[in-house]
Amino acid sequence: MGKNTLSKNIIKSFYIAWKDLRIYYSSPAALMMGLLFPILMFLTFWLGRNLPLSVALPGLAALTVFFGSSSIAVTTLALERAKNTFDTQISMPVPLIFLIIGKTIASCIYGFVITIIPISILALIAKSPTNYFMFLTALTASSLCSSGLGMLLAATAKRVHEAMTPLNIIRIPMMFISGIFLPIESFPRYLQIIAYLMPLTYVVDSLKYSLIMQGTVKSYITDMVALIIFSAVFLVIATKRLNDTLK
Amino acid sequence: MDIIEVEGLTKYYKKFLAVDNISFNVREGEFFGLLGPNGAGKTTTIRILTGLLKPSSGNIFVTGIDVRKNSVEVKSNIGIISETANPYLEMSAWDNLMFAGALHSLSREERRKRAEDLLKLLGLYNRRNEKVENFSKGLRKRVAIALALMHDPQVLFLDEPTSGLDVQSSRMIRQFLRKLNENGVTIFLTTHYIEEADSLCDRIGIIKNGKIIAIDSPENLKAQSKKKRTLEISFENTLENIAEEIQKLPNVKLVKKYADKFIIHTDDISETIKELVNFASKKNLRIVSLNTMAPSLEDTFVELTGLSSLELERIEQIGKMRKMKM
Image (cartoon, rainbow over all chains, first blue to last red; front, top):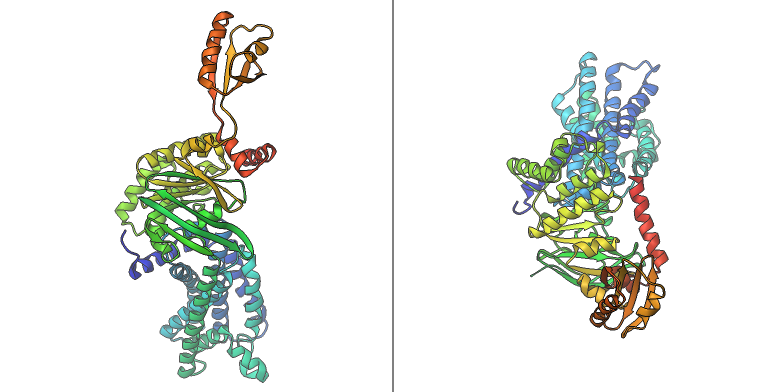
């Protein structure tokens, strides 16, 4: 078996991700909050407003990846505690950070896959001027950041609802001030400041540029940097909170 | 050589003192039991030893590695079975073992070989591809045991392994643990079943209110009991006033009749046996059974923990209720 080297730990993270995807991708909480809710929410706002489909794409993509990844992150961690399998996981020789990374990979893949397929089809139908390389990069960073937020809130939760409730308290208001439905520039100054403190704002902005070329390359790069910083901060705090549960 | 070394282990949950400055060692190859009533600190202790919980203070070395500094390395050398470490119900027994093997960095070939051997040994091989959610509690426990043994650990930690299981499953698990121990695996077990600890363990630590109040072999613990040895005798044919007659024999302190048996309290077991045999011969009585009754581990446990027999009965009842829920 030998020492637990970095490469071995990374491989373990992928095994954890694979197991999580197999078990949790079809759980009711993940399907309801990660797939149905963002689509229904989006349709509620989009239908009847006579917006072209291409203009609506970034909003739909942002909601799907944000809700999908954060929901599965909460599910994989909190459900394990509820089902008494969390100890099985932590009784294995895997450092907590790699456990978190494994679960983050699973929720990233989930958010990524449920977004990329419908949005790519819709982008082709709408003949949207999509830069697919930038879109994939933006989607990866967005799913990573959304998973990190889910991990952060689920790190100490013993039941799914204990993490899902605060997650919804945070992400539903975030949805309204992140530029999905209304441009941020139309908000009063104080709301604009709050909006730029929200990760979803950068998710929406990066998807707007990559999907419909709205914005600038500079703002796209800023979005990427912001999402990576948010992700790192969320994952570090999540690991610390998880570690605190062992005290 | 000591494979587990604990010195001054203390654990607070906020202000509540769960484990109070305990120290003990477990030798390599030993079957060690931590026995105590509910809430005594058994689970907290085992969770700390296995790196699932951090101590407030104290030094803990398992397989020579400091658990506080390198719990991940310790976990490579130990197996853990507890009520809160279930197999994944949504996966088959086989997939559970493959997953555990992968997290222990076993090669694909090693994983397959080890899983096959363990599932055969635990009588699960024919159901290896079934989801664990279809298994009874006893079978799930066997999967949990296989999970903990995938990497051939040096020490196996078990927290209440037979709690809530039916008699057959409990017996199967005990036999398996015995065999495992014979093959050199050190076993650390927590239980509140006194008979389980008595029949399995080389040494037992009795824990109460977070403190270890006694630690010794089951027989030495029994010898600490204030209860004296007694004799139990039954005759094929009985005479009237036989209890009074036995009472008159030298060294006999007290005679009580229970059903068809006489319980005799004496200061000298050996002499009293001789007297009883002579007595039976003189009175033309045929002895059906003659047993020396040592104090039980339960007697010592009750004396040391201060539990009343009513409380002890309640603990047994809880165990039985868990079995009924099965």
